[in-house]
Image (cartoon, rainbow, N blue to C red; front, side, top):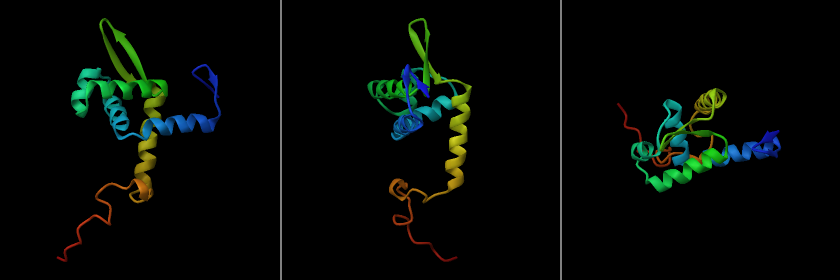
Length: 122
């Protein structure tokens, strides 16, 4: 495979994709951009992170080929890198949601069964 001027193996491409998705803030950025293109200042406010932090995450996502930057005068708009990537993210969400909760115990949410209150009988 050819990625960003470098011949990469499929395993390397998937590892880069996994790295991009491994951070919760980057995942939230992708989800926000999946809804609509955005500008760094507005995205930082929407996600509740500093502009510097968001800038670092956007740089990572750009380097991984998941988002694209579009200069607009003195501003830069960020968007999902093309229709294929937009579609792929939707497919990935569908697959992960279909797998159900508990398929990856080490990344289970805080409300996982061991942390959930006991059920109350009706």
